[in-house]
Amino acid sequence: MRLIKEGKAKMVEEKKRQREVCLVKHFTNQCLPCCLIESTEYKRVLLTSQENKLMKEAIKAQKAEQKKYAKEKDEWESGKHALRSIVAEIDSTIIETGSVGGTLLTRFAEKGLKYRVQVNPIRGSILWKMEVPQIGQDPASVSEVPYILFVLQAEEFCDLINSGSFWDHVHLVQDRYPTFTVCFVTNKLMNYINKCERAQYRNAPNFNSWKRPPVEEVLCKLATHHVKVHSRQCADEAEVADHIVGLTSSLANCRFRKPLSWLSVHANGAVIPKNFIDKDLAKKDTWMKALIAIPKVQPRFALAIWKKYSTMRSLLKVYMDSTKTVREKELLLQDLKCEDRVGDESRRLGPVCSRRVYRTLMAEDGAVEADAAAE
Image (tube, rainbow, N blue to C red):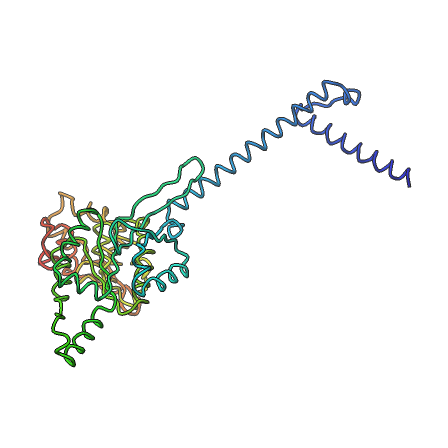
């Protein structure tokens, strides 16, 4: 048994020595005689080879770390972790007074959204911030979301209106946050007013001091006389909490959405029939959506134009050709074939549709209505 153990130990040592020789051959690119294996030069070369190996491993690890940081940074910048970065700063009075606080915090916990209960500069407000952690060499950053929301109980809202201090409150908020969008959320407003009116009707002598506030007039004036000031009436605490949580998600994702162009804004109102076969194309292609948005241009007509002129530039290039007359440009699209209900390309666009597209795209007055431009 002792001899077997010694033999195994010698075999392990020999294999180890052979691996070292192969390592030296790899880095020196030459064959070494066995007599030099135990020499000082061999040990120096072996040490250098090991240092090179460690250096390569360190460089490889550094590149992997940089790649990891770059990927993580791209994910944060693309908005993939937007819901993880937004933090709602809830004023402590919302939690301490009223019945909204418990439901609100429960909804935040269910959605996995972060929040902080603190004392805000203005009572009863909710503010939002985007907090991005440190990624590699980039330091952590905190930015404000230009939106402020107030949660008002029905009685509190009515008291502000009756006392005449509601508009002072609105001006105070706008002066402190001039670039912010302001939203007033009321809880059980109409329920409270109806309840007070019924009680006043039944016990008139005891309710002489209560006066119905002009809530409808105030809410209408908010929409018509003030910029970036909104209101929302909620029926109960659950609706208030759902609105605030949904708003938090929207505020987190809105800054990462692709900005809309003039064409995409107007084309988003286009009505696409359910039986239109290229729905994905109509939703994704901006030029296609713009053609569908032209009044009285059916999607199948727009598809025929898109097949011939796949970009707006290609069609405008023909429309801007000085060698063609206006009539030729107006009738440029009339002979294009479009698919009928069966799928056969047997129907022409016709002069009316062709003229409408030309006059809409070449209208000189941008404020004119589409129907007026086509006439």
